[in-house]
Every structure is written in C-alpha cells, then in structure tokens.
Length: 403
Image 1 (tube, rainbow, N blue to C red):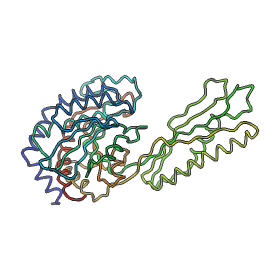
Image 2: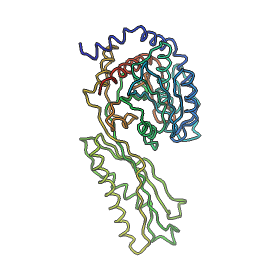
Image 3: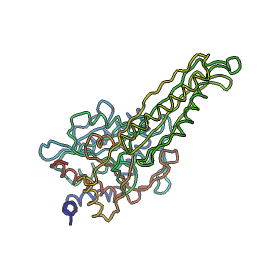
Image 4: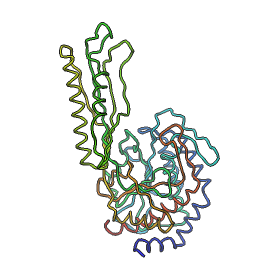
C-alpha cells in the first residue's frame, strides 16, 4: 500500500469527513438552487461583477473569513486553519462565460438537466466551490493549512487568465492550486495547453469599388495571408494547431474596405514550439502582405498591425508530483479510473510559475459546451464532490512539506 493511499484511507475514516460527505449527500437541492441562481446572472469576460457580488454574499453566509473583491474583481475568501501557517492552498472556479453581454442566460429545467449558456462551464465548478465550503463548515473541519476560495474572473478567451495572474501577483504564499472546471467524476487536467492569440489588422485608403478599383483591398490581402497560414505545416509532435476564429471588415458590397481584421489562435503543449510556430506564422503573414504591396506598387500602401491579445503558458505537472499522487490515491479509494487530460484552464498560470496545480471536474455530465445549447446534468455529482473534498484536505496536509 502506497504512502498516499494510506494517508487517504486514514483521512476518509475521519468522522468529520463523514459529516462533510453527509452534508453533500443531503443538499443536492441546495446546490441546484445555487446553480440556477448563478447561471441567471450574466458573466461575460470583463463583465463578471454582478456574479462576483453574488458570490461575496454566499461566502459571507458560509462563514468564511476575509471575504472581499480584489482589484480585478475576483471574489475571495479564506477558510482559516487552526494555527498560523506560512502557505495556503487555492481552490478556485472561474466566474466568466464565453457568451457576450445580453445573451439570454435564464436557465430552463428538463428533468434533471439544466439548459442554459454556461450551465456547465463554469457553473458546475462554481457550485462545487460553494459545496466544499458549506460541507467544511457543517463538519467543523479545520484544515492544517488555510484554503483560499476564489471565484475568479477572466479565464475564458480574451480574459487571458487575468484573475489568476492577479492572484499570483499578490503575496498569498500559495503552495498548491486546484481549479474546478466543468463536469466529470474522473477528469484531471495535468498538462497545460499553451496558446498565443493575435489580432491582425490591415488598413488602407479604401474607396469606390469601380472608380478606385486599382487601390489595394485589405480584405483580399488579409485573405491571402490567411490562406498562406492555412498551408503552414505545423508539427504533430509536439502537437501544435492554428486557426482563424474571427474575420471582419468593410462597410458595403460596393466599397473597397478601409480595414480588415482577423483573430488567430495558435496552440501547443510545448512553450518552445509555441515560440517557433509564432515566428513562422507572423513571418508568413508579413510575407503575404509584402506580396500584396508588390501588386499595388503605384498605390498607397496597406498598413499592417499585429497585436498579441492572449498568451497562455504551456506547462506540465510532473507525473510524480505529490498532488497528482494524492488525486490518484483518492480515485483508487473511490474506485475511479483517473482520466488525465491536456487542457487550457486556470491551472496553466500556477503551473507555469512552478506551483503544483491541476484542474478537476465537478461531477455530472454535460454537452453543447460554449454554445447556446449548453446543458448540465448533476446526477451523480456527489462522487466528484467527495473526490474534491478528500483531495483538497490531503493537499492541505501536503502543504506542510515542500512540494
């Protein structure tokens, strides 16, 4: 029997842990009500304030201490430990959704399913965050190290991990981080998928489609650059991908546009490969635009602007990391087959800083993620919540020794 498994077996036998499990078993209706309430509060990236305020109220109700909104809008609270401790363990779930302001987020119920944009991503993780805080309070479980609860902003898209970046810029002395993300009883993201995102804008004089037909067309030139990017050979090992997510420009069908814009997403599991592929991609764009200039040599030139709009670091949790061994031991205790995955989550940031971190599912099942048809079914999520609770408590115990 491994040391990790013996530790988990002993922890699971604690009467206070059983009391916490009991709370989780009896309060699915409360969890569902919390989830329905938070889903109905729109929370696009950079517009999470109303949902964050709702979390501040819940944190107060659950008896957490040092409850506050920080400078970027993260809702934070502390579960203190018995004695003073030099480190804390972060338990987080992101507030924001991918959906723009004014999206109809009012949830509908279809049997056990909850139907709404953001019903799972990340209302499932946020609900689990409250569930763990409530179970700890009911069981009067005081961890050996303080737990920093965070309903954080800016995980999705253009948010670019801004909530996590701020948390780790403040002196919380975080020894380990656990991010609650989406559904699933067995999932764990232990490899952080890195990404670079760019906005490419071409500007020109514009004009009338007939009278000024000789002038350079930013949409044609940008399209040629995007076609060249589509032909770019990217490695399969380490796997690297590139795609164009949005393209816009022009005012009417009979006008040469004054500008055209596209947004590019480049991803890899390797930081060094991201650097290489970024250089290749940007050189490809610049070459394509130079070719466009050559075709319109006698005309006013196009202006190229490339702005980086996102940078998520790639990183990997070592396979022998104590917190990963802890989670595997918890899964063995519950008879769960651990599903290790690659993903882009809030765990990217601490992993890139050398802080042990992972992201785990909050239970239940889901579908239609990042679409208006998103749904979440919490059936069976109690197992995932028990998993989170045991793993969190064991991680707090591990924080007493260097990771």
